[in-house]
Length: 419
Figure 1 (cartoon, one colour):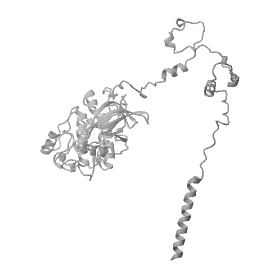
Figure 2 (cartoon, rainbow, N blue to C red):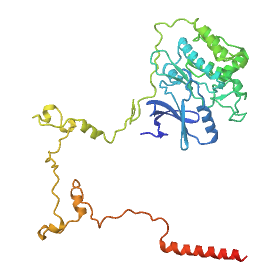
Figure 3 (spheres, rainbow, N blue to C red):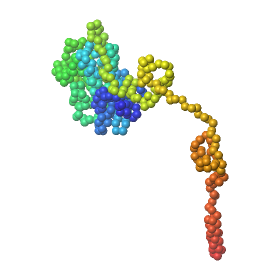
Figure 4 (tube, rainbow, N blue to C red):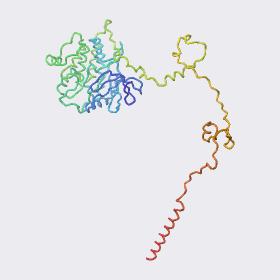
C-alpha cells in the first residue's frame, strides 16, 4: 500500500510533476474517491512560500483546477485537487496534430472563461502553456478544459519572491514585457493565450521571439492559410508586442472570439472526429476503483461462518462439480455429552472424613473445583473486624502532652502574678 498522509490521503502512483512538487493519484479515505495530490519535494523556505501561496488559492470555476484542501504531516505538506484524467493539450496535439478551427475556438473560450475568473480574484497566472491546460476524459463529446498549476501565480500588489532582474515562467510563452523585467500583469497571460492558440492551430510550438520581431518590423501579418481570417484577428490581437494593443481583459477577448465563431464555416461530415480518452492508465497493484484493496485478517473466518454447515446429503465433491477446498464449508465437531446442571454434593467436613478418604482438601481447592457451589462462610475466628480509624492519638501519648500543657500554663500564670 502507499504512504498515507495524516490518516486521510493514500498515495497510489505519480502522474505528473510541477514546479515545486510531484503530483500523485491519491485515495481520499474521507470522501471515498481518487484525487490529485501535489506533494512538496524541496525543503527550502523559497519553495515553501510558493507552495503556501498556491494552496491558498480558492477559485471555484468549472474551467479552473485550483487547490481544494491541504494537509501537513511531519516535514511534508501536500494539497489536493480534482483528478483530471484526459491529459493536457500537449497529449492532444501529439495525437492529432493541428486541430480544426471550431474545436480550437471551444478550447480557447473555456480557457478565457477560466482566466477571467482568475483575474477577477486579482491573480496573475504567469505560466499559461499547453502543459498546464488539462482535459477531462470526455471521449468524443464536448471537450472540457481546466487551467491548472498555480505554482508561480501571484496577486497584484504582493511582494515578489524572486529578484527584480530574474524572470519567472516557461521560456517560449513569455510576453515581451516579461523579458524586459516588467511587473506581472493580466496582459502577459493574454499573450500566452495567443501562443497557445497558434500551437493548437498549427500543431507545433510557435517561435515567440520571431513573432514579436515580425510584429515590430512589419506590423500584423496576414492570416496563415490554415487559420480563418475572423479567428486570426482575435489571435493576432492577443499576440501584439505592446500590452496596450492587446485585449484589456480576458472577458473582452472572449466576446471577440464569440463574434468570430459566428463567421466560421460549419464543420463538415468528413472532419476528423477527436476523442479525448483517459491518459492516467490502470491503477497500480493493490488499488481498485473503490480504493485500496486490503484483505481483512478475519476474512477467511467470516466466509467460513457465513457458509452453510457440511451435512451428509449423500453427495460427493464430484457431484457438485467442486472440491472440498472450493466450497468453503467446514465440518462441525462431534457433539459432546449434555452438560449436567446438577451441582455435585459437597464433600463431608474434615472431622467426618476417614483415612481412606485421603487428606483433607483446603477450602480454596474445594471452591476452585466447582465454582457453582458457594464457598462456606468463614468461622468467627477467621472473620476480621473492619479497619476503623481511631480518633486522636493513643492514650499513652495524649496524657503526657496534656500534663505538659498544664504545667506550661501554670508557670505562665505564676510569672504574670509576680509581675
